[in-house]
Image (cartoon, rainbow, N blue to C red):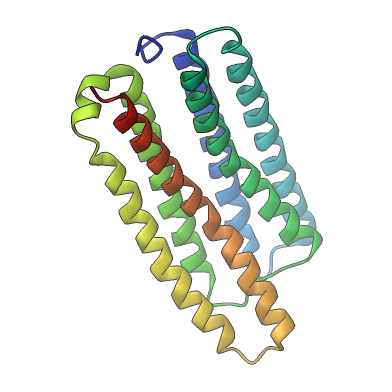
Length: 217
């Protein structure tokens, strides 16, 4: 269990990586806020999407630095858990970049009336990630207590359930619109991508819970 100590190299590096992923999620929120405004210029969205891509690249660099730090250290199972945790968090940044790039290159624009709900989804996802960040900090600062009580992970799942409710409502709204099936499916596909990060974060919470259970004496 010695790997999970505050101030260790792996703690510092994984904290930096998590912060970079969080920054990418924040940058993506800025992109989406512009994307749901019909009057936003294409050039504006391209510029904002480039910012998301830059933030994603920064998170990738942090991920590689963190993984490199594990070389030759710790038991294989511990290295595997830490790498799985870090790469799963990185998937959130990857998803943000993919969505921004897809919306720009495919010129996907949601009709009026979708903006508030889409921004709410991203807001809830950010809240999930904040709690996830707190959970990872607990691994390194209060492991003993975290082993006994990990209800904080349920808060992540509760927020994901709220995202699910909004997602289902928007699916119904899309398929009730007077659009051809191809356009309905395109909007539904983009909505699914936007909601994917919430599912990813919930899955990371499950990973952490498994890590705790398998290490609990």
